[in-house]
Each structure stands twice: as C-alpha cells, then as structure tokens.
Amino acid sequence: MAVGAGFEAVFLDPLGQVVQQQWVAAAAAVAFEDLDPVSAFPIVPGRRWGPGLWWSATTGRHVASGSQAMRVQLMVLDRDRRVVGLAGRPVRVVWRDASGRVRSWVPQLFVRYADGTGMLADCPSHAEGGGERALKAAAVMVEACAQVGFVYRRLEPLDEVVGANVKWLAGCRHPRHRGRTGLLEGVVDVFARPRPLIEGVAAVGDPIEVLPVAFHALWSGLLAVPLEVPLHEHVVVRAEGGSSPDAGCGEAE
Image 1 (cartoon, one colour):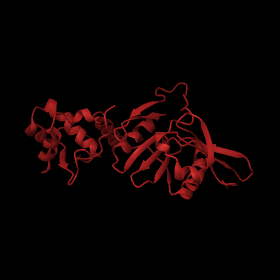
Image 2 (cartoon, helix red, strand yellow):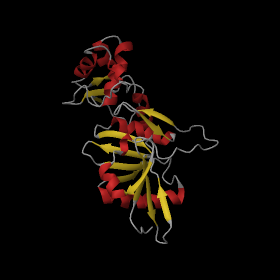
Image 3 (spheres, one colour):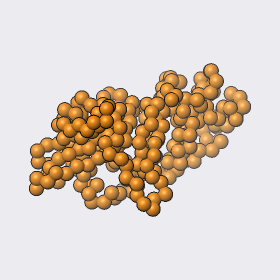
Image 4 (cartoon, helix red, strand yellow):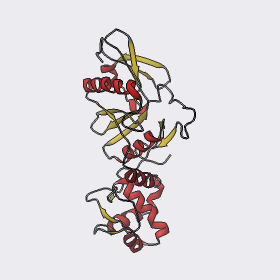
C-alpha cells in the first residue's frame, strides 16, 4: 500500500481532548504509554471474552485489553525487564493511500522500552487474524514506525505450555507476593544452586507461605525455569545472577 502525504497521529491528551498532529512530531514528544485509549476496544457478539483491564506490575497501573490473545501478550511484556511502559490503543495512525483516500489504523498496544524506543503491536489470535485489512495495515505500520525509530510487530500466540506457565506466574505478579521482610531474598539465595522447586521452598520454610514468593521471583526474573515444559513441584529452578529483588516489581495501587 503506497503512502501519500505522510503520517499523522490522533490521540487523547491528558484532559481527554482529541489531538491530531504529524506522526514524527508526536512520536518524539508524546508519552503514548501514559495515554488512555483513543477509541474503545470493540465488543464482539458471541465471544466469551471481551475487553477488560490488566494490572501491570511494570507500571503499577491498569492497561486496557481487548482480547484474550492481547491479555497473554501483556503478561509476557509485563515480565520483560526492558519494558517500562504499556498502553492499550493510545494512538491512531492516519495516512492517505495511493488513491488519495484517508486510511487509519489503531494498533492494539504501545510498548515503551527503557532506552526510550517504542513498539506498536497487534495481538492476533492466529497468524492470519484480522484478515486482509489487518495485514495491509501491518505493512503500513512497519513503515510508520521505521520513520520514528519504533518497531511494529504482530505478536502471534504463544506455545500452549509457555502460555499456561506465564498465566500461572502472572497470578503472583503483585508486590504483595514478596512476602514478609527478607523472605524473597531467602528464596532467591536458596536457589543459587539449581534444585527442584519444592526442595528449595521447603528449605526456606512452610511451602504454603513460601511457594507464592517463589512464583513471584519466577515472574520477576529473579529465578528462572524452562517455560517450555509444564511447571511442577520438581521442576529445576535456578537463581539469575546479579539480579536485584526490586527489579521488575511495580508499586502497589
């Protein structure tokens, strides 16, 4: 799809007013990760899962989510230590096609990285999700992002086992699962030598108290396991060297 007179961005300012400006200028100056959705996620009749909110451990705020597929991708990005900001549908990108007709697309997700760069992304439920219009828009988004040092991705679904493991760990993402003072540090220390999960947990204390802390450490990246195999009590866990217990943990609301 050829692009005519460049790109423009449409978004809501902090007061909820609609703003439209050149895409290059907006990408350089606007913190898209802090903005509300420029348009609501659609509700599709007959679908069992609709729009909702995801509480982000990275930002300590809610992120608008439009589908189950998007929610899973939010979980993955929320664990990524390079990520410092997340927002659902914060910007509409507008352009003219080769025939001069105005076109637009609202990517489902904006991600801000610690180095200041950004990613616009869509989260299809399968490789061809969204149909021809979405695939054509994806090609245009790649070009728009390249102009401003961002990237665009279609984040395709995770492997079933990896997705299930990430969902489980996400249940312990909140800082309250750090436990009492010193417990998180003790859990990380006990896995300095790789060992089965339940063995290390039992060495620290009562598994009922310690297991949620271990799962929080696995969510935060302080501990590591192979996510390609199902989590179980005998999975071998190791500490990630040089990690701070505060890394990856947002503030409580």
